[in-house]
Length: 169
Ligand code: ZN
Image (cartoon, rainbow, N blue to C red):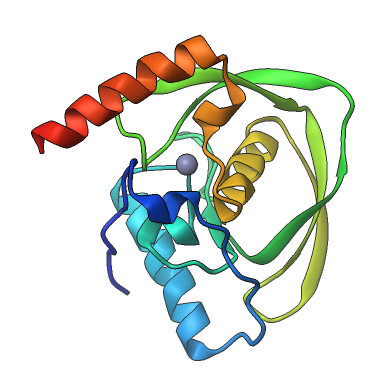
């Protein structure tokens, strides 16, 4: 396994759409393991392919709390198939936008289809933090960031700071 460099805004790779994975090869599985290691190292609770410059529909997550057993999800071609009508709001951050968080409102629960690392198609219903995390990561596969879900005013404030920080590094 290897820790990969995380790409930060305003890197344009974060605004591109990732392509579906047609064949699950050893390289795909290696990448998913590298993504998990990179996420745990950061540390973060989710990471999507584009965040390490890989435009592939791959996401990893572990939303377990510190006092819980770790629960690693590694998903290939995840796809939301049903969304709740009710929304809930959680504070979100992003490894690609370090140092910034915002309250984001998203559907409460989702039903999801994905291929697991054994190549098996799975369907799950997720709620709470895991549901928010999955939606955040799938957004990354379509070039969408959590700041796109907040008011323009709040987004502009974060964006101005991001650009200033980017100039300083
Ligand atoms: Zn993110």
